[in-house]
Length: 97
Image 1 (cartoon, helix red, strand yellow):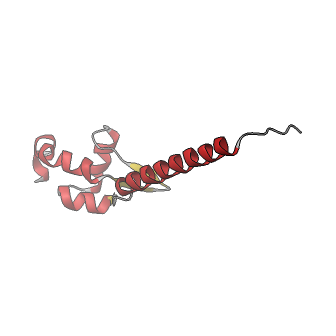
Image 2 (cartoon, rainbow, N blue to C red):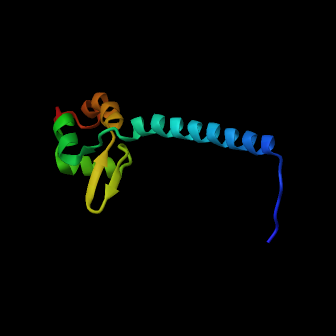
Image 3 (tube, rainbow, N blue to C red):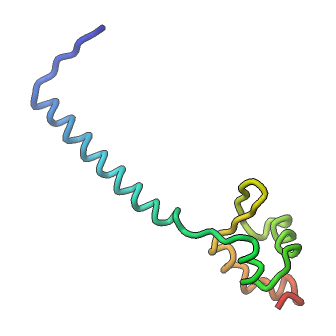
């Protein structure tokens, strides 16, 4: 085992630097958690908002026109993805509106 000896002022400076870094990391974590806690939409909610059938929603996924995350057998969609598709649905699927 090796023992390292440092001056008290150097140690206090290291502790202060560590505390400042720790506070910055905590602030960044709080900032990023706000965006992450945004509510994702279920497939049923997306179908209702876009006025499309579940099969049409599956086609959008298959063609990679809408981003999604899958947890077990359920699909979840970001609200931004749905908002992005609202103006396009009428042109992609004329009978959907």
